[in-house]
Length: 484
Image 1 (cartoon, helix red, strand yellow):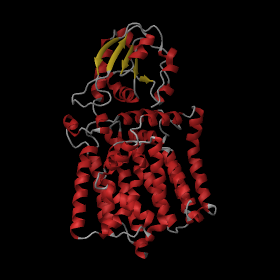
Image 2 (cartoon, helix red, strand yellow; image 1 turned 135 degrees about the vertical axis):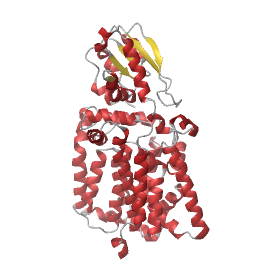
Image 3 (cartoon, one colour; image 1 turned 120 degrees about the vertical axis):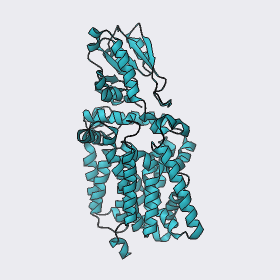
């Protein structure tokens, strides 16, 4: 395996990574902000060591992106696109360490970067964008350690896990699953010595500020996790959705890759990776986790599965290439804004893309309501929203229309608190019951729409107006919290 150490990543793989990044950047300005991106921008303007629904890294990235590139979807989406490019290169590097040649590395790179989930998270700024990269980097480092690398690589793994926890807590479960997998087999000997525990210490030290923030704020992540589990689609959907994340075609080499890591003799030193995946899969299955929680481990499975592809010959290989290309093409239309926004609903599977349209129009509708209020009362207006997406749209896009900032009971917006005092209240979204508690005369003045007919989460929700509230939002703020 000497060539494995010296051979560079093939130029075709580098070209694949560059093409995927270029595609993502070319489409980054279509449609508009995602609801989460608006929230991240606002959170980035209020930097802290934690938030109700995520650690600080992604809001920090949003802050940096806005500072450098301005407030635009494209500025926010540069680093997510580059993160997926990094996943592509790391997948090829893992394939090489498994013993795969150039064709195997190219197939793994195309499969990892062209999968529906990779394209989706590479298009939008989200915690999952960097989760994908950090999980893939962690598995790459683990592969090296299982292959006899210098034990000081444990420090690199500790840094990666620690930074990952500052992005999304799920990567801590990867660390636990790997530890259990190692203890179950003969490679538990890798845990002997100081370096693994130095790595654990580094990870814990990096994660400590967010843990302190969580404890100081009542551990909201636990409440969030419980709320997400209640909205689970169930075990059957969890399993079926795994196929959709990759495409039905790419699920085949991923499944083959997992089996080879588990059972093939010449890959047996990497068996803990397959065991860790199984542990995580079962855990998320029974605990109500979201289907994409295990997706960041698919690159390593595709890397192992590409060895099977490399052994295919003749018609079988051509069939796999053609089917994979078709699967990737279908995934692109679902994950990326290739269609005009007005045609998005043709797919009947718009998913997260549906949440990237309609925000300027929502702000315009709220602005019209604001302008209907007597000028003398406008400085005292409060805009109260049902979700952080609506609040984020008001905070990010509203200043151009002269709107005041928004408040909400949703997630970290609740921690940021109510206005100290206010006059009229504009209620955006499903907040009519709350307004009814502070105002005896609430009027529904509009309905949230978008010009594309896209049935997203906001479509059809009401906009209310309370001109003369009897009480202040601060009086009932403890009752408006909803973490979900």
